[in-house]
Image 1 (cartoon, one colour):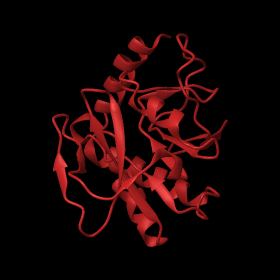
Image 2 (cartoon, one colour):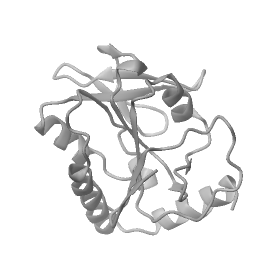
Image 3 (cartoon, helix red, strand yellow):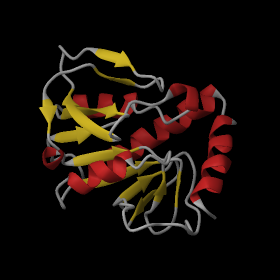
Image 4 (cartoon, one colour):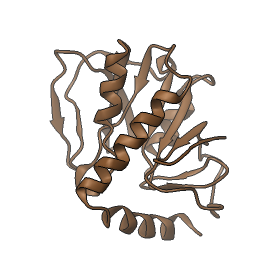
Length: 187
């Protein structure tokens, strides 16, 4: 299937989950994160969920990272130039809600892309080769291209992979892992 069709189909599937089900699935995904061999690093980029879109509750993963005394790095989106700036989450970080309903840092200590060790990536669906369908803006593809080649890229999905996304382009960045409630996929 094509990205546009997959976006429509999987948004509908995700929105059909009730709040308890999506919370339970988010908890399963957070527990699977604990099983990955990724906890010897320092800087973990994590997105806040768009709650009205019924996205995975990444606040659970943020709690895990903080519990391991690691750095949580949050994205702030620039919608004009379609980029993401990364800010360290500290006790002094002020969060605001952007126009898409996403909590993000107002300002703070900026972290460059090459300092990110692990990036948790939002997605709508993914395929068996490690490609993903996002919202279509290319924000995370641009971010990931600026990261170190050693940065670990982890997608998070409520659903199992599809066979193949048909319209992958050269600028699409593959994931290293994708975590679902039932399984962790390695690419």
